[in-house]
Image (cartoon, rainbow, N blue to C red; front, side, top):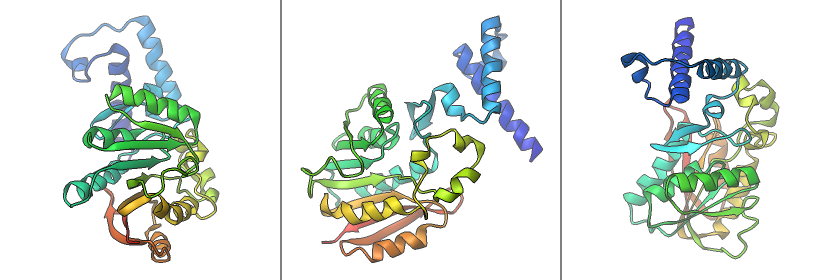
Length: 270
C-alpha cells in the first residue's frame, strides 16, 4: 500500500510539472528541461495544496471525461470515471434500439460533463442542462464552448423551470446527490473540499431519486428513457421506488469498474 501511495504521488508530481511547463509528461524524461524559479515555486505550491486534500482537478483547473477536456473549479463537483458508464449506457441504448433521439435533459449538470458529452456524441439531439447553482451553469457554459457544442442551459431546481415542457423529452439523465447526510462528515478528505450540495442526498441518500422518479413521467414523451447514476448499496432501494412508480419499468442496471451496481435505466410505459 505504501508503494502504491508513492507511485500515485510520483504520478501527480509529473502531472503538476507537465502542467506548469506546458509539455507532455514523456517530455519530462526525454529532454533536459530547465525549471525556472517561478515554475519551481508553483510546483511546490501545488504539492502543498494537494497535501491539504484539495482535489487534483481543482489544482490543475481541468479534468478529462469521455475523452473530452473540461474546465473545473472549486465549488463545482468533480466528474468521476464511473459517470462515464452512465453516458455510455445512454449512448448504447439509443444507438442499439429504435429509440428516437429528440430532446435530452440533464438534471444537476454541474460542470456540464454529462450534457456536453451527449451533445458531442449525439449531435442530432437537442440537449438541455439545468442546475440550481449559478457558478455551475457558468462553468458548464465555458465547457460547451471548449468542446464546440451547443446546450440549452437553464437555472432550475429539478423540474421547476420546465412547466412548459410536459411530455417533451425523449431522455432524462441525472447523477444526483446520493450520500446519506449523516455519512458526509466521514467522507474522504478530498470530498470535504467539494460542494456539500452535490453530495447530500437527504437522510437516507434517496431524496432526489424519489422526486425525479415521481415527477419525470410528466416531462418524458412516449417510451421516454430515464437514466440515473446511483450510490453503493442503493440498487435494492431504487428498484423498490421504481416498482412503486406506476409509469416506469426497469430496463437495466449496469455495474461499475468495481462490480458495484451504478447505473439504472428506466422506461416510461404510460
